[in-house]
Length: 422
Image (cartoon, rainbow, N blue to C red; front, side, top):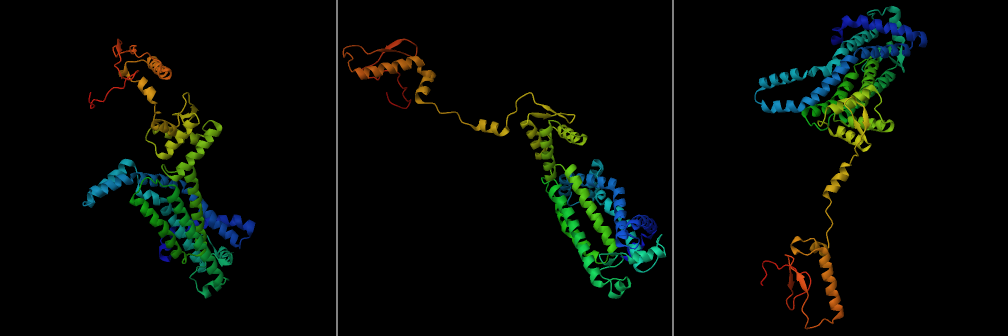
């Protein structure tokens, strides 16, 4: 580690100068020899570096999303040219160039702050060795050696010997307890940050090897930093814990305000936006109007989360416009579930009398059928029909009266089945 840190010795002077400037500020408040003054100076160094790296962080987010969107196409290229690695690499580079995606952009924040990390490690190692470095002169060196965080010197390590820790006016037990707690917190913050990214801000509809790699890194990175952490000075652990907490908070903000399309975070964001629009009757805020505008521009090419949002607006009688605003719908909206139930609903079964009345081949109107049925009922009740009288005539299909045969049932006759005998 010392050899790697020495490669970044060219940046130790700017890093030491920034720390000294913050130390002069916090030293006036907490005292120049306190751990608060030196510890907060390191924290402020991290905050300053991360603020400068915000543009790279935004580029990292865009690159990560582009990589997720390209995974299906990349998988097709890998399967098509699985026996030709050179052609596979050429097609991959062509795909990156067409979409403007750089796979290394996701690593830019870590790579950009690596020189500052190793420079700080080099500065703290020199303090532990009682050597001046950069703008840290002899009085500042003595002050830094006196600074303790919960009983552990800034330059002490978990693996230091008892004699080396005693030279810094501390006990080995205090150093190991403080460093162990900070290593655990550093690893847990790293794990939680990656887990939050995988569970909330990844398009779950895309199942690719890229997601499997991210899951592996979620468990591998914390283990790597835990193993490396025993060789870090307390001041470096403060630096790395601070940058992990910053990354976690920055990522939480991005997930809540600008989630990945198709992710769980996008569904939660659109549901919050739907409640806000329903409560106020309008889209409040330029950024929210931009989200609605982009959603309208997609047309029918929307994911499930976006379709639920549009359906929720329709249920409230609102329609999203191309400029990101919403207006009241002039036409009544129909619930999709109710419409589906209406389509599946079967018509009611008609009675036998209604079916006979509605049969076009019968040739008898509804009123005539009712009249014939009434006459038949009266004849049965009276039982006084003259035996010599002629049976009543009924109308045929052509409308002309015809005589009923003896023994034939009066009224409308049921047509015979074609297979029956005469």
